Image: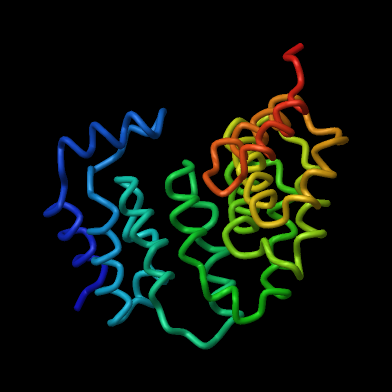
Length: 235
């Protein structure tokens, strides 16, 4: 099977005009959406992962980025490949990151990279340069990877140190930081609350973090009321 041709033909076959309109409203500024639903993209990715998936990654330029789904499908393939070479998987991940140009591709890609659990410390170290990046989506990639795979007893203190010291003017990076802090609170409420009581985060990230925590069904009303008192007035 020619995976590149297969990918192109399947994406065109499952294009949905109504879903394209829906997706376009959720991802402002992205005008190359084909309109393929995520469950279908996952199904296509699983098929590619069974065959010569390496060819897809060795020919990413041939696959191109005509549509957002071209990029998203390539990223999803990594969710399903069975490759025991951890370093190679990190390399493929690094090769893909520059193709991330919106939050949807970023978040779907990050969520699927469960191979990092094989060596979480090494994967955590791999993320270090992304967490220092001045590029909006490289930084979002690093933060979403943290919240997707590393919010546990081993890494929580390091993650909180990172999140509460990040500075960025990029909207989607700031939203990711707030999201990550909310996940930290859900899993480690006391540790995270202590950081929220006193921090140097900009007001937007601080308040957005609290809002996201309050939206969670896994946080008690008592905790939500306590957190509301920490909100800052907009300057």
